[in-house]
Image 1 (tube, rainbow, N blue to C red):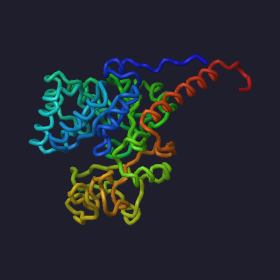
Image 2: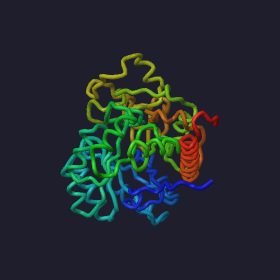
Image 3: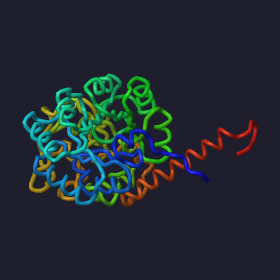
Image 4: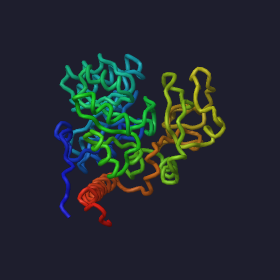
Length: 345
């Protein structure tokens, strides 16, 4: 069987071989995972949301000790205190990071500062309006997140509609995000007008991910209907910031009241620790390798694509499986479109 070419123009822009991006998951997408994805031909994004300049420096050095391939650093200007954001950006520029990936509200000043420093800018958005704003601000790539996504979700529209809608409206490359975890998903995204996919849950469930083993085990056990959309995990983030997580004792106790939880009205109860830092019930913190305490009550982020994840391979194996599945999906489509009318497949 001849192979189909999966290399898209955005691969040349980013400097990767395959159009599969690692989501810059805070806490989870650390240097080991970023380097593993990059070495396998994908595109790694380092999750450094509201982290110190010292940790950014440490993690970037670790990536560069493991791979020579380009990568991005994920920051969230709209949810980061101004002085910390200034320090994070300055550190990334000093380190000559090749690209930055922004998320949440478009902050044109942050995009402009990155572009002035000669840095490639990817921007994750959750609506058509935000995609247009990112393009107008100077972003080079827009990552379009459907409501199926795990973690923080900044929109309400499913990826099937939103990705095609944005692809029709912007001139910069579009990457699809939210529920994309397999090769068939990659093919579907490309059919909608995207040039690649952005995967969180699929790479969280890998050996190199910095997520706690308990979080990974829950992903393997979960189905799509086990994920819930809620703003209950609101501490440490701006109000009205919903997330998708695997249901747990916290969400079960809420019953049908999954929305409308303002951080100012939530209790501050310490339930876990990470590196000496107390973690609160209802916080945005997820369980990491270094976390101890009541792991079950913490936010176990996962998208609806969790239904398609049933193993815990190394990141390179996950990427290889996605690419192999894409070839199978394309071959199947090729057979269907070339079938004679009335012929049996």
